[in-house]
Length: 528
Image: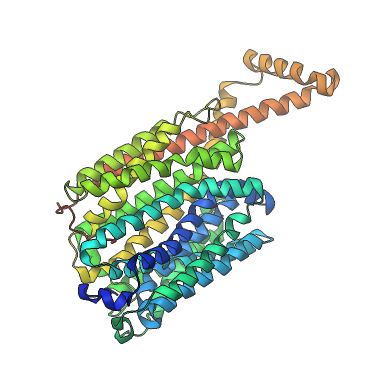
């Protein structure tokens, strides 16, 4: 495998070449900000995308999952590409692809074209975060890297704050398409700044790069692609009830087994899986996988609840969920202070318990909640999440050698994205299936021949008689009751999803204490 692109500490002057390092930080943070913003900005626009492209809400979530999977495919290959083609050139190419694909997403006339554009956009955005972090770390002397990474992390945290709100405002004021068009000016500005201020160090051009592992990459594309198709179409085609899904799962498992066998046995592969011999790292990847399931599911499901059941606009839903990011911003200085003083296992325990308790509180939602009912829990959720991002990296990377970090980072982020994609699909499947289950339970509990139903039907008939006339009011009244039935069943489905996500968080607390103890501050800066 290509050696990790990590410069010696004394090459700062070579990397900056007289440029103020904070200008370099602004350049790379702009690219990362754009990529992170796009992950959050589309979440509140999903119902509008579904309506505009004649798709269901289940199908609209493919807009998120296709992006995450394509993003995950590129992550393991980003280190090899940066050494082979030059880091600056590769970074600018990724931003160009991302920006052009953003325009294609906004202009897409059908769901199929939208998904194709999102796959290309995800591939372009996959390398932006690791490349930006590597450039940033090399541009500052060791004594200032902590401050640089704090500013970088602050920018990454602000993007999810602005994402739902900005996406909602653009969707309501103009169209959901502008949630993608907004990337075009940001991408052009990032390209101009990177071209002007960033330079590749000599070790990049002098690196000995092995041949590209085409077999490993092909296996990665096949198993992640099959996973994407199964997750997106499974609910629609009754999962294993469809023969073609069984074949897709067969190819998924076969290609995954080959990928693991190939990357474990051979040299100079796309990723070096022997890093999983380290107990802390394998536990860290399991945790980041579960964390991806939890955070992406919550980010997707909560705006849907406000829009689908409470009738909020995209902008209002964005404002309601924005406090999560504000809480994360408030938590970053605290975690920055504690991360060098407290065992990361305690910080992770606090983070997962906080996330679990607030998600459990979300399980009390009803159709009568106000916009401020969940304000404090959402704010606390963001604060708790800040206690997971940094400590999980400290624990996972803390027992690895520095030369293993580049390879480990690709795998770590791969698991996070795959977990997010799986989480979104599972959440959507649960909403659909649990809603049907609760409908049957309600119908069995309140039979149509019972007095309770007859009283409700009479009341509904009386309320619509003025619109339809006495002789025609029966059918609209029954339709009104059925609508109320569907709404209540869907509320309980949301409750089920939130409560099961909280159980997942509490499970993660147990996994945390399987870590070997790591000295606080041991992990390299920016490892996550």
